[in-house]
Image: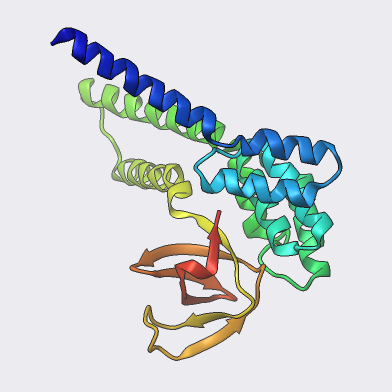
Length: 239
């Protein structure tokens, strides 16, 4: 019985190893094509690797951005630059996206207050959180000490501490509530309600960046031109 089980286990391991070897190494082939000076063909293999669940490395993202720039596919170029920027906030990348978008008439990449706030948060958010948390603990310990020493605590100090902790909670959870995406079709319909029967409020093209505030079934709730709309999930590349 044990011998039969051992044989089955060895056969199963051999089968898995054979399947892994039989699968094409898209990334290695794409790297070779990119080094050979054919980035457009390399991009197709990189995309296939991503579709198969291969995690995107920083080098892969930059190569994809370069390939789509050579191909003239500005929306895909901006998408991969945005994914890279989301990992590694850099002002040069932010300005490059803004310049490319402005030349091609695309919006959402402007170097405005919102994007700079997000850039600042991605760079220094952790340090600010630690600083605010340390300050809050210090104030809390001071209040606890006064309570044990039976010293009076002014009511406004309690309210200040409560507001501070509330603000800290919002600040810490801010990234979880922020998401963005790039429109992926030439004709994207924005609706006032999450329904295909709802009237179309506006139609936009491919490559615009939008802020995502939530989802409902097959719909995403987005913020566009100071208004809230709904867009189908298959019409957007989510960052």
